[in-house]
Image (tube, rainbow, N blue to C red):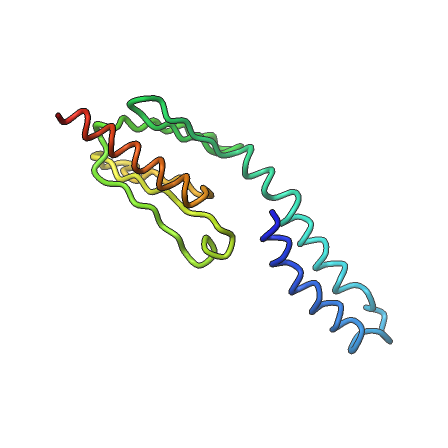
Length: 140
């Protein structure tokens, strides 16, 4: 949330400068910073809470359960014995916001890739390692 707030400071400052230098004598004075502040508030305060409430996961010994959605609710259960390989990915926005995505590839054909976005990088690595350890223990 703090990183998102810092990120949104840049466009907000730009909007304030634009407003002061260009729009101060027009009818639109104050409108651009107000619009940017509205979107910043949504991205920093409202957005993360809504995403957090609509995405969840649970590790239960021998399976991973991922629940997501509000309008279209999806509950995916992945038994560890069906896991082919696991990746932890970090794109540019993940790096910017300090998050990672756990990608679990399964042996199925339909919905064979299960993603768990928005994890702390250490937590994503920890989940990946615990699933690998469980798979190794099952194969011995």
